[in-house]
Length: 458
Ligand code: NAD
Image (cartoon, rainbow, N blue to C red; front, side, top):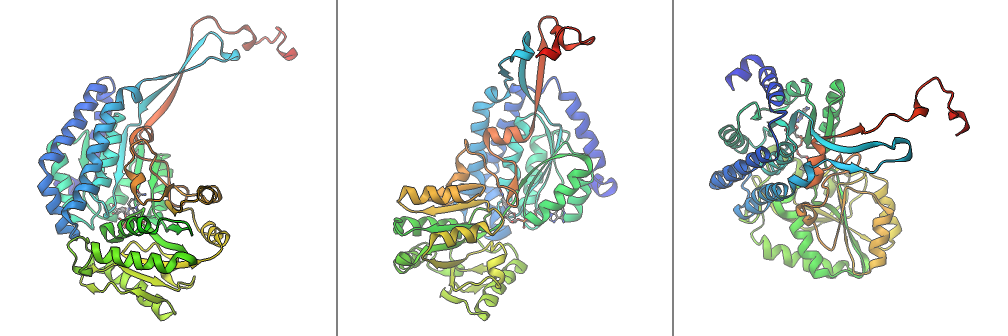
């Protein structure tokens, strides 16, 4: 760390570049698996410290730390270790008439030195999940955790320094100045998780070196309840998706369209569900706190602004310091900030609708969201919604669970992201797909000048 303060990240970057060169012939399947197993053991050994760091950073309940921070990384490691041999194997490509006599294959190759920039909302999972794919693909990594979760950032620095040599994995702590100093270096790949605004800064910096990027961004993910939905299930899933991590989740349902015919019954069930899960509101032990005072003030401001412009509270969650209780609000209009900004907190706007076409038009008038949730038992209506919209992913009769399916690509589209993470998709994000064509016989005579062999008759 002292070195970094004195000389910036260049010496570390140079050490990683040398490390990548030195490991070109030696960082094979067995070595990568060993690296992943070491990471898994370190995570298990630090379980109590991880729980404590997240409690310190934003009062995240222990069960949520285990379910949403620790287990997803361990699952990523075991899924990756199990399938890595197959993913690393070059894939044969059948010959064509014009390349007759050659053999073609696609060989995934490490990109080189990678930068992983993580956000604060799942600060452990979203730093280490990408690292699993990065190592599996044979790269080195500099990890830059978020400065807004300092206890988790310090823990990551310690844990990774104890587990890996710095020319393979290193943590550089700090805020946006540190991120920008790192972004000035010619990384081979940049994996960024955060807001679309900063995503644009990252992509512009990557363009200076033509570094490839994976951008895992956010936005306003809508949910729709159709007239034929299982309302009890919908209430359970929506309360979980919206209020886990106190709504500070990139794939949390941002706002909810509910069909007028079922609105009242659904709201009664949702209120019941909230009372059952988060009875004591802002002080509930099942509810994480807002990450800092500025974000708590931002969220309170969103509600205040909406109410001053005619919105109505359906459930006042209350606030106690950085504790914000589940809040339901209706009569949202486009001039309200809550209708334009990603909410990223435990406030759910409810919008009653009658005409599905209007809902679809409203969704399509906005940047493509990271997730779209549909609750309905009528298959044709679900299919219509899927076909008429675009989003990173779709959840049908559930929220958030698609994140934990290791076979599905996790990512956005345009404003909600570029590229994908998880399993094979994460491995590919950190790999260069190298085309290799080998000549087995002599070349086709038609190919070379002088062109006297009748090529113009083809
Ligand atoms: P953020 O964009 O503010 O910060 C993310 C990271 O970028 C941090 O490490 C931060 O230090 C760094 N950073 C901030 N400003 C920077 C700048 N000007 N230049 C370079 N680096 C800078 O995001 P956040 O507030 O930490 O996280 C919330 C956002 O992340 C939300 O939009 C959410 O939807 C999104 N998110 C997306 C995913 C996903 O997987 N798609 C997951 C979690 C969060």
